[in-house]
Amino acid sequence: MATQQIIPYISFNGTCEEALAFYKDVFGGKVEIVTRYDNPAMNAPEAYRNKILHARFYADGITIFASDVMPGKTAKGTSGDVALSIAYETAEEGKQVFDGLSAGGDVHIPFKKQFWGDYHGNFTDKYGIRWMVNTGNDGK
Image (cartoon, rainbow, N blue to C red):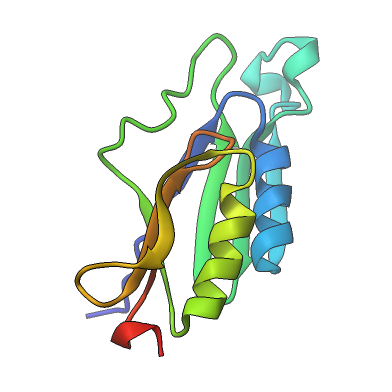
């Protein structure tokens, strides 16, 4: 069987390019804007033609696809049922990413040592995406 990979595809309400730039600031990596709504076949309103139809974000161990929703549609953000979970080897790495990604968002559980022994925290970022940041092996 060929190698498989699950790639989250995130929809934004017109803030896709801004959100991916924010993620690049936190994780490093690169953003590829593949297509915008400027294709005449999309029939997008003039004001929407610079929005993202499809983009890719890559960083070490991370791949995310993303777009702005079609004009007239609304991205639902997070229902809380699904979160992007990211794991780090040390609490220091996890804390750094937690602090960066949660800036301007809504922290649900602060990043700290949890009763099960590992470090964990979760939040909804300022773009409405729910994240969980974790360490294994007791954060050592």
